[in-house]
Image (cartoon, rainbow, N blue to C red; front, side, top):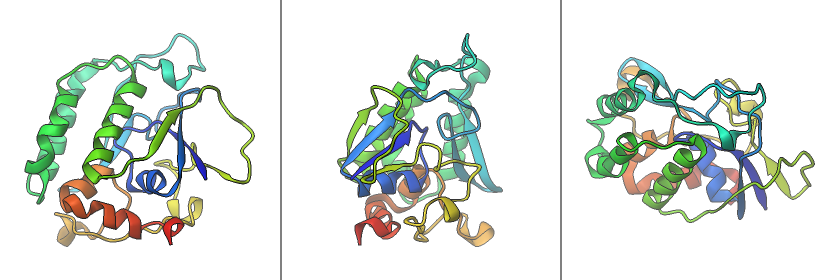
Length: 213
């Protein structure tokens, strides 16, 4: 089975269940870039609730710019702000100390293209969770999806409800550091799962998709 996904910045848990459940994964490079999506934002659990972190991008010359050509902007010292937000949200989690040195370099080095940044972060997360998905970039934008393919390019989206978009995904509750105050927050960025659960993240992902049963 093949799945099509958009590029995503520290994608939500739902996205990583797809990396686990499908044999072939194509990351879309030729879609028109739109803001307010997981392409350049992730959602973490801050002490006061959900917090969206967005990477600023360079405004393209044309209205319809493919994702592969989107450049990261240096505007607003975002790397420093994102890392500070991640650190203050997760420095009391069981595994932040264990993993932070893997993530920090991404907020010190400058990447030109958003797709490259997202891809390298995704590879890191997969290695830490211990999954080995076959990830490929698309060579063209495919409009016809066959019956043995799944298209989640626009369905895994911060403005859409996974309960209606994705019947195969049912987020398994896991320990979260602010849970007593906020309750369990489902489908946050994969780093929320990783910093809270460490090596058990894989088990939580397996239990969160019906595709493996």
